[in-house]
Each structure stands twice: as C-alpha cells, then as structure tokens.
Amino acid sequence: MDRRDFLKTAGAGAAALAAASCTSGILGKGPGKGNRLAEEGKMPQRMEGVGLLGYGCMRWPTVQGDDGRQHIDQQEVNRLVDYAIEHGVNYFDTSPVYLEGDSERATAEALNRYPREKWLLATKLSNFSDASYDNSVAMYRKSLEIFNTDHVDYYLLHSISGGTAFEERFGSTGIMDFLLEERRLGHIRNLGFSFHGPESGFDELMALHDKYHWDFVQIQMNYVDWTHAGRGNANAEYLYAELDRREIPIVIMEPLRGGRLADLPAGISDRLKAREPEKSLASWAFRFAASFPRVMCILSGMTYMEHLQDNVSTFLGLEELDDEGKAFLEMIAEQMENYPLVGCTGCQYCMPCPYGINIPAIFKFYNDNVNAGTYVVSKEQQGYARTRRRYLLSYDKAIPTVRQADHCIACGKCVEACPQHIPIPAQLRRIDQYIENLKRETL
Image (cartoon, rainbow, N blue to C red; front, side):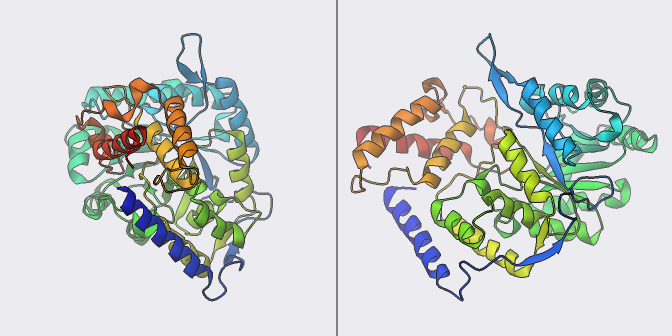
C-alpha cells in the first residue's frame, strides 16, 4: 500500500467511525447482555468438567539463557499454571512442535505438580515433516511419556485444510486405525482436529464424520473472522453452523486474532471503551466467542500474568452478548477492514525461516505502529522528522539487522506453512520498501 492508498484508507476508516458514532445513540450505550453463564466468581462450564477458558501453551514466557538463546521460563510457567488452576482453568492445549518442541515439556513439568484429575491435556499429532505411520505413533507415544500419563483427554490431528491434506498425513498412512483403537481403549478420550482452510476443505472433513465420529473440532473464531476471515479461509460463521448442525463440541483458537483484538487502532478502541470504560478490549472478543452455545472451550495464549488475570476476570461470572452486542462487534469488524494491517496472528508456523528472517516480529512491529498511530505517512505530517527517526531506530532495536525483511528471497516456504494464507514474501517486500523509503525520505 503506497502513501496515497494509506491516506485514503485511513481517512475512510476515520470517516466511518465518526459517522457511526452519531447514529441512533449507539455510542456510549451499554452493550447488549445475554444470560450469565455462571454465578459470579465461578469459571463457567459448557461441557461438564471443562472450564470455558482454556490455556494455549504456544506462547509461554521466555528468558535469555547463558548460551544467549531464549528458553522457556519454567518458574514463571509454574506460577501462571498455579493461578490458572486455582481459578478454574483446567484445559491446556499444546503440541510437540510448539516453541521448537519445548512446550510439551514445560507444560508437563508445571501440570504434573497436580493430581492428574485436576487438568485436561490437549495435544496434537503434528506430523508435518514426517507423516509416516512409525513417526506418527512415536510422536503420540512421546507425548504420553512427557506428560507421564496413560491417556490424552483431547487429541487433535494438527492443522488440516481439507480432505487432500487429511489423506496425505493420516488417511493413507494407516495411522487413523491406530488412533481409533487408542480411543476405543480409552487412551484417547476425545479425537478431533484443528482446521485452517476453505469451506470446501471443511466440507470434506465433515463428510468423514460418519466414519470417524469426531468428538470435537478446533476452529479459529473471533468477531472479525466470523464474516471477514478472508485469504482463502472459511468464515467462522460457516464453520460454527456446520459443527452446530452435527452437535460437535467446538474449541476456539485465536479468539483475539493473535492479540490484534486486544490492541486495536485508537479510533476503534475508543468506541469499545465508550461503551464499557472499565472493561478491557480483550474482554469483548472473549464474550463474543463465549456467546455461542456449541463452544466448549476458548483458548488463549496468556504469556503474562496480567493477561491471565484479566482473562480470568472476564470469565468469572461471564455474561453472553445478545444480538445487539454481536451486531455492534460486526460493525467494529467492518471498520477494522479499513486499516492497512498484516493479518498475522503470531502463530510461528512460518518459523524458522531458512534465511533467518523474524517474520512474526516484523509483522508485529509494523502492526503495532499502525495501531499506535506512529506509522509514518508522509513528510507533511506533524513531527515527521522525529517520528521517522524514532521509527527507524525502533525497527533496528526490535529486529536485528540480519533478521529484517530485506533478507527475504521469496523462497515460499513460509507461505506453505501459514494457516492464514498470508502472501508473506509480498508483505515483507512491501514493508522493506516502506523502510527503504523512510531511510531515503522518499515517502
């Protein structure tokens, strides 16, 4: 997006916000509230024994070790898990490939300090690099070994986009017969899959329900992806309806769209704050996801204690949104489409880049500056020289030179891995060109 396009888009978004603020007295009006899901101070449960707020273990906190690398901060992980369990969070979602393979170990170390009946384990068959039967069985057994358990409560076929992907990784390898037998024996209590892809791919997987009897399905759902998923992914509205029709319990991932719905552009966040000044931006997204009765659990990757505490506070005594509240968030979602952000959720599936580029960090830096209004638009803007210099210095500080966007050779490996179907090389080129224009003062 060039400077003129940015100005046009941002201007349109601002105009839409201003116009919407003047309609029907909606701004400043309290949100439409539905039923309270649990009495005040208790974690709600849609399915007996499963806390509605679940812990996504892909973003555990890290500290720098003596070797100069980032390692999971186990002491902090233990502290987070203690607080979560104390407040009714008992569903923990991890994978053998999260955090370079270390998430399961750290999660197990924290959870195994508690009796097995105090926590529910959700982990995955993440056989992306080697889908052979032997490797898949070994990965499953390794998860059981790490958690020192004889069963997995929720086992997922990890990130399937449709029937072809299912056939290549699971259907033709014989591993499904093994997993079905493990389910029959009680070693897998619930068998399902996580999905990123188009409607046609989801239909193919739903057609397998009569054969495999999916116990649950994990989908990306938030008030933006409800009708604005884009980039080749099915809208969550469609996914939810198909699962609800078959009475299949749903686990929600990315309720905050990779944190974007907790850090909104100022013009949009002001609208949410005007309706409920005491509530966090994230609470709106969680209440949206919790307002659909087929939803069993809503995952959040809570890296910091303040995030965990805020989310727990949202869920204790949670009230659903009614139709008016959902309609308000749909209007917010439409306005968000006017902002020139990269739709990255920070899932890290694109990493490691073979050329060392820190793709998620580059996109986060760019999005954060657009949201904060520190994105340099033109020489005509007030404080241009200071803003330009601060932006360039901050970029170099946030992203080491050897890991910046200009090192991308468009090999395409990241595109294949991205569940959001982002044209990553094109976005990196766009950001790199923007940085070059800033350096040359040619905006």
